[in-house]
View 1 (cartoon, one colour):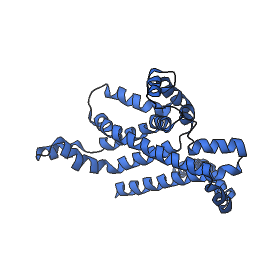
View 2: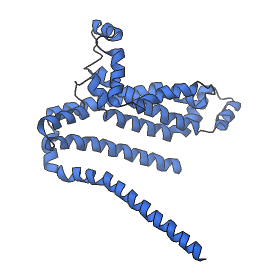
View 3: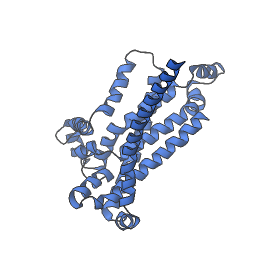
View 4: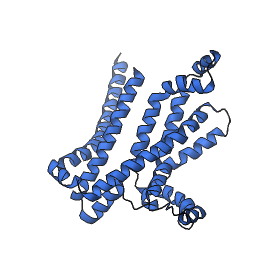
Length: 266
């Protein structure tokens, strides 16, 4: 009996130490966020949030992140379904290619895209001759965000489709529904929470993209690039409004994911 109590105390002590380390990590997350909210008072934020540069960067970020997310959904939805249902061994290779941009450093991702659409490349030259700029333009921002952010949607959507029981799809087909009708009325509704989570994550990643955007399109300025420019030029105080804007977007995405997860559990 004594050995049992001793073992329990040992486990309890280890759990307490582990919990303490976890608490320190939570503080490491929370304290900088609280510091940002404390230092960036309402007067400071309101006085600078209406600056033309910040308004322009906000519009650019919202527009390009929305376009990038839509492109990711348009191309990623069928790709994710195929990856979830394909039995071919090389489908894992395709998934690896899709996942690779997620593990590349953002600046490397931007450089990789530049090797295809840069001013001195064949595609970049042809586009320039047609009067279309693929770098230092809205298109350049979208290209950077799409390369870095949309793999999140593909990976998340693939997982969502994999969780849909194939027997339900087979039952739908046995009842006379076509493949398209089965996907529309059975698969998509069941996978919808995961798809929404993928859309939210992709949008948040796109609107916060910095490294690849700097490589492809320093202008027009997005919120992260404007934040970097403000910090380099004016210092920390001038950066608060931009940081809080991006923090607000992140909080909104977190709220969407929380609602979606609760509905999934329900």
